[in-house]
Image 1 (cartoon, helix red, strand yellow):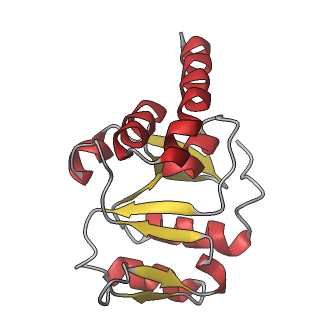
Image 2 (spheres, one colour):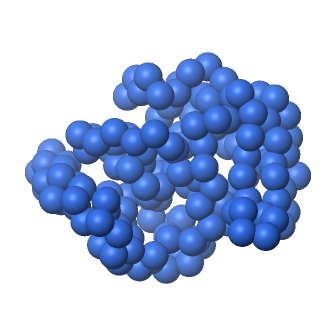
Length: 156
């Protein structure tokens, strides 16, 4: 699959660096759904990490693109900032799902510029969005379910 326009050289370099550094992460949310063929758009690319307390690999990957990790502070969640990572948000919890380790076992690898990037499968994205109770998630669920049906039909 050709990398979507959302991913420029720096974003793809960052994702590749995460993989190269052995950082345990997944793309989740609508960006993950779009990579699997759902006709959706989103402004952010959500990243879910196994452990943000051990960040050496993440820090090295961020340095390769001029990014920085900002730890949580008060009401501010953890963030990554910098020109090469401005589209990425950190997710610390996924409603309606098992823990990271369990969900990571079922990740789909999507090829982005010859790097296998782990992505939360569509059915698990649907489960999470269905559990949030947020209006914006409820509105997109029919589109995601239709996309899952189409994807499932192609793989049979």
